[in-house]
Image (cartoon, rainbow, N blue to C red; front, side, top):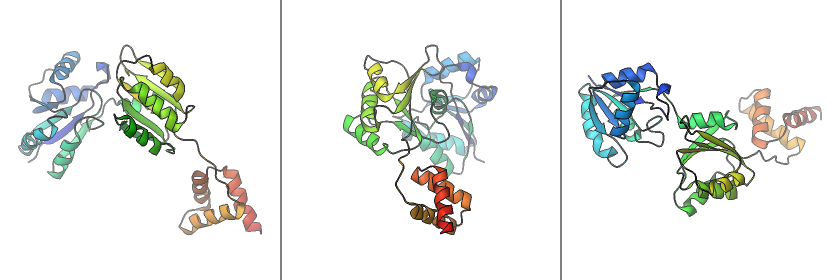
Length: 279
């Protein structure tokens, strides 16, 4: 009988964001694998939780070395709770290797959902949230960072990044150069904490603001690329719609797909289909 691996969402800054379920799991877990033992004790004090499980450090430099012991505990039926410093484990934090190893070993993996800087920043950014992508940390080196941003220049979805306060000014300056100085963005600093701050504006303005120095945990949200309308005559548009229909799409869905692909107004595509049908 195998145990269970539980991924716990730790608060970003406010202990009150944690619900009773995490308190219960902290108190009952046989093993607590944590990124920082000091943070664990502070969180337990804030939540008024007494834990009796064995505490194991689980940060980037020891992550792989800890796998055999944690897998052995799980194989013996233990409940292992994984907690990182803030937010959900595995999201730019330790955890992925343990999750994969546990799944491959047939261990039940579940979570106690909790705060996430990604969705929190996205929600308060004021930027479109219907489609987004998480890009983690940008490369530290300037050349690699500029190359990564150049690859994202045509990304239509809203993008979320984590960034070090010491590299924020350089990252914003490179982003303005690669994505355009007027691209809308939001710098979310110290989310949910006492000194929470959200700066919204064009990348060029945010880069100038950050040049004076910024402190705290940073989550950067950047608007996706605006659609670039293509030039197509009515016959070509109608042919695109017909191809979608031939693949099994309804007329409505076919028109929607062509609108998304071309960036043209729906009325333009619809009129093209009607005009071609009438000829």
